[in-house]
Length: 275
Image (tube, rainbow, N blue to C red; front, top):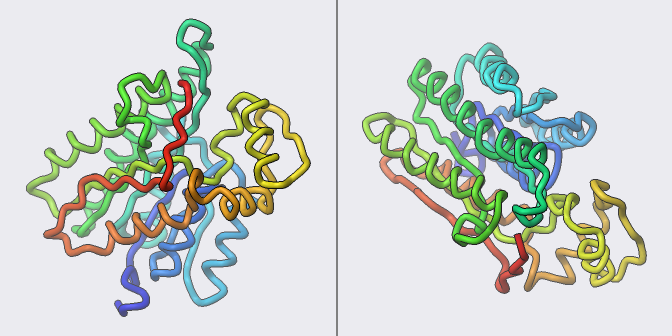
């Protein structure tokens, strides 16, 4: 281990690594020396991150998976352990939001949020602890929540992130006698494709604020250059995924005696959205 590569020899898993915050976290952990297992549903973007990590001598593996499937989450952890013999860092980042009023909501969209944002975190934590204990790791589990969890009227999505906060705090208590630490990270509004399920009028209005003259359809991802311009021109309202990644890197590189419980990473101004 060196000062420039503090995670040398460690194995890390990042879910939701196809884009945005997860992709940034993966690349920062890889740059710090960890063998990163990137998991998500878009292989092409993860392969780009893998190449970026490996070019300067890092190590990365890509595993396409759907975290809503319990067996696939457990299989992801097993694959990392089978390949490297250990697991040191588990970042449960995968998440999504279908905004909308409860009275008008679609139960299937609620189910998708609950399975992705809550069940996958529970299963990922459980599988990670088992693997970390088996190899005697000084392990770190990082759960990506949201500042929505700090509001008591943040709708169904917010309720899933309240659940993540409770899961993190409860697991932290359960692991007090272990050499495993749990950090809960709550990002604010970040320039990612997270809002692809938001109202089109709202999203296209934000795009126009970036100076781009394009429109996107429901569920469509924004081009990388648009996201970059959004973050550059709207720094007061939109944070950078790399800022969240740096917070995660800070948490997982602390001595095991230091318990970093909660981190909030948000831009200077809050973007208060209706649930």
